[in-house]
Image (cartoon, rainbow, N blue to C red; front, top):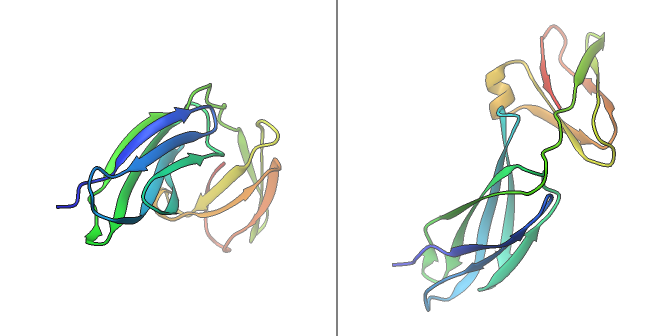
Amino acid sequence: VIPPPVIHIESYSEDSISFSLKMTTNIKVSGYVVNIYWTFDTHRQERRTLIIEGEKSIQKVANLTAHTPYEISAWAKTELGDSPLSFVHVVTSGTRPASPSLKAKAINQTAVECSWTGPRNVVYGIFYATSFLELYRSPHNTTTTSHNITVLVQRDEQYLFLV
């Protein structure tokens, strides 16, 4: 039986998490697949996937958000097949940034100007869809470091926007 890997949180800060991966078995490990999940504004679950080569590993994931819950899951790729999943949860330190205040204004039937307030020198994600279900499951999205963007949309549709 292949055991799940052990995920150990080494440290965390406002914008990063460091963790180690190891197996408690003599089975040869060729690498790990790691998923880091977090929820954006309760509407959109985000994920970052890491493919890690080798048996033992310490990883640092950066560009995270302060005071945000993250779930890390991992499984090992071994000579006998894939291991079961392991999970850990961690909340980054610091104070979560205030939600931006979004304004969306139609320029014409296929363009919407989105602008918002918020801190400088960060990356903003703009998510939009024609229904709450689509906004949660598979929204259109783009990123920017500025405080406004023009989004192209389909004519004769109503859209929901999040930033």
